[in-house]
Image (cartoon, rainbow, N blue to C red):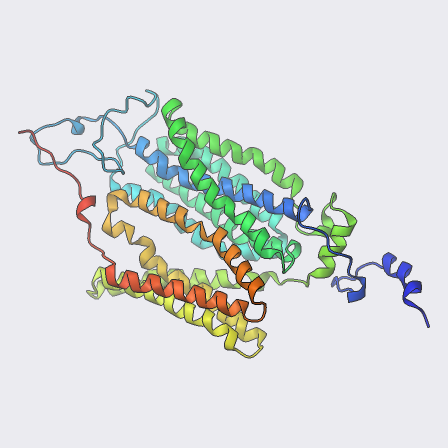
Length: 444
């Protein structure tokens, strides 16, 4: 009978089969995450998300300068028309600090709202498709090409604005298509790089780039506008994105097997610790979310044509997008160990949540049309904190109670969602608020 010692050399020379399954006794020892290749992958994704969010946020910052002009309408006169007011509520004064060559445009608040929303329309269409394609052809291609396209389109924003509002809106929609692919496509890479006990940390590192990108863009965009003009905000962030694409295509690989610089020990450790993931299954929540979001929008408009109050439609959409998903999530610990049932509940929970798009997500347009860009940008930036907080809190709960940790995570999620639903149901409004109404000044 062959002993364990005799099988050692044979086991070390043995190649992995196509399904990458190995005996438990052949799994190599743990390779620390610090200074590992998979940690480097997370950092690259961090900067990818950083650039994507920065390129998305800068439109909210530059819009103030893009529409800030000293037209004849801005002079005091006896007309009942109000003075133009910028998106922060101040009187529209001559942009003394802006370079003289920075163009300005006469866009009403409605047009501005369409420009901001155009990117979201595009993103909804490609989140599911991006996740599916990443599972089939790889995250490297899907996210890399989308990042380059989004960066190039960012460079095209100033000339598109000069060509006309239709060109600008089309460019913003195309940007949204790219951003949706990046959002949906990046998670497929963790099916081959992220070990189960490390995915929280790796995803947290990658997604925290969204929050840092929004913060940095807001911080330095004003300085660029004051010194160079608003077009250079798009040139700077678009150029940085194009240059970063070189790093992306050189460093990122879809799996450890194809990575040329990964150590042999880390490659064996990752491959032997992971099962194969199904790309279609990973994309399924995005597909359901896409369908639900579109149907929810049509349903909301249909209810409005039937003389439902706007606030009623907003609250109904928010409740339907929050309550059923929360119930499905909190039910998971009490299900029998059924893979199909658990997958169905998780998919429905993610999919139904997009009903909120017709509720609280667009409510800023109802209560403060003139300030909607700032409010929606600020709320998105604040929501980005969840990508940092959730993995950390989940890790703490799971480490404290390995047996019931996930149950505690789901109950905490349910409590937070219900608190938000109850608060919005009581205090939610859909009328233009007094502080958001246009000021009207006349000569005494």
